Image (cartoon, rainbow over all chains, first blue to last red; front, side):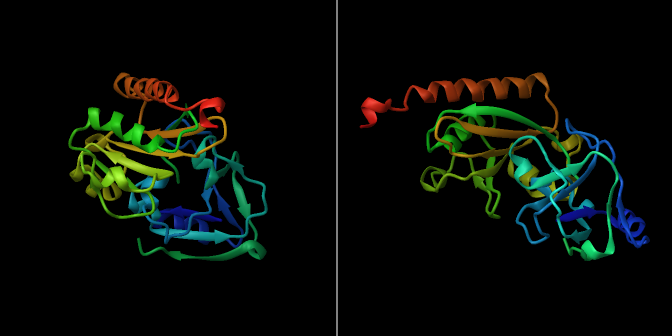
Length: 102
Length: 134
């Protein structure tokens, strides 16, 4: 599972041993929450699929999914899910992070 | 990490749902372009290439090539608001769910969604019943 963010968000998350992805109200008609996707940085047209500009894909966090996230309603939910509250990822689940190069 | 709004439509169980969608979009945007989600080639909506390609299960339609080329850098903004439509569909046994991703449900976009749903209902008349199919 991946979370994408800009440089500012990246620095804030990686500053902690336990990654904490803050829940917030996204633009559009989607629930308040912290959002994630199983689409890797190499996915064609990733920005368009997620509906966000490329700058917000500057950095990524990758972690092991434990099945506790809720799929987005609709078919984008096949690849996008969320937690309705702040979501924490302990070091044992962390797989990697860094610049996407996008 | 997510943007835009998702709306759900229902299409009949026909293989060429994308073709019906593109026909509606072509009326709205004669100079629009098509982009398969897994590809990079922008294809004009009026190009014969669209007629013979395999149906895409996820694709984008833009009002024009310039909007398509600038979208990733700009993201949703005033310049391109509701000028990219994102479609996802699955061929199902009974009915095919179609997700349409837009920026905002304006009256103009609502009309487009209504046109799509009406087109799907019309397309259902072309689906052979069990007796005809046999």
